[in-house]
Length: 209
Ligand code: TYD
Image (cartoon, rainbow, N blue to C red; front, side, top):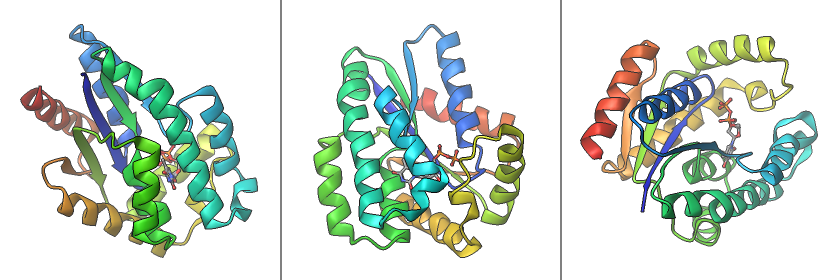
């Protein structure tokens, strides 16, 4: 079995940059790497992602939204994550089940027992060996991601339009999960510069491998 590492955090936390940089660093060492993301890590998932993250998704009932994230994940686990792990790859995933537990569960308010039952079903118990949580105050993250979205013009701004309280709940939710599972989670102060963060992540991964 390969190693499964996930990256989690709120908007503008820099997790996608760190996910890419870790992939490049491991590849440079000649290791087999698969860098993927949720939602949208497969062609079908990309269609689900478009639905979820563009304005059409705003009208979704929280339960329907949960099931779409779950559908994206079930497909991704079966078609991408499990095969890559079986081939012994280093699988780096930008968001995974913890995002559902936080956004749809703790923030949107879907009961934890439902979220957990569905997670068991969609992931078949597949958990990351290591999860990096890039933690920062939402005011800073939102500022960063607004500038990025303006530059990208992707139209994926649904979550960025949520009130600041929403993002504060997201932050508190991830910190709660990290405290519950201190062995799996590594909490990083995402206000640090990108290079410092990358070095810390690399050190942690080296210690783990
Ligand atoms: P992502 O592509 O990581 O966007 P960003 O880099 O801007 O954070 O995630 C897209 C959005 O989807 C993000 O706002 C969080 C949300 N999301 C959920 O609500 N539940 C989930 O299970 C996942 C994977 C993401």
